[in-house]
Image (cartoon, one colour):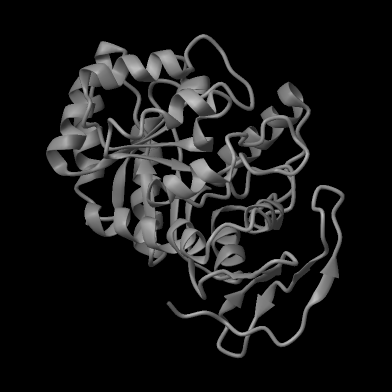
Length: 317
């Protein structure tokens, strides 16, 4: 496992950590990013290149509408207002190699145009992978899905059930799920109740879906927040299920993952790092620092920040 060496460090103090943390964010002469974290007990180092498995990329006008919506409806001020190419460049300049992004069709009639854009972006930018858009209300939904899945770097589809406002066990989705499994692809679900929820999200709805499709290859965003215990309890019975870390490891917030280090260590092979970039309301580095501050094993950080993501990507190509 290659790591970058750190020549210097700066002291960072945070009220949520019991000891000083020494970190450096930056690039070496080869342009490779590195981060070192000293907890007072041990030193943790990120791999020289990491995989970010939860990034949002949209056409510029949709990005602007989303940022406006976040501010108006949730009072969230998106910190990194970067368009798609700027977002990729920002992450690549900070040690991210493979980037897995998603977008979603917030209503009928959007998925085809959005997926046309996705296919162009995938051709434009190397080492970029996509959970594409799908809406079961489109008359040609399966045709749109088949065309998207023909691209080798489309990993599957994103369902943002909070926004799209249908259940994961909606029968209109069943043909798409079966197509995804037939093609050896995956799903990305926003199906938890955090940071906000409605009647279409929650553990019970997702468990009902898995009762029908126990071998559904799926990633659940945000570690299943806020029903962490229920969602993590699915892992033993569903070997193709993974979780991503996005928005779940923010110091001092009530939505933070709360099951402890033993659970994280036990399931380290089933968790991937995700940033939620650029649609975040805090500095991107905060979650990375928080994860490193848990003082888990170096094997945990290697798996979550690199190995698990690469395994999923390679399994979908």
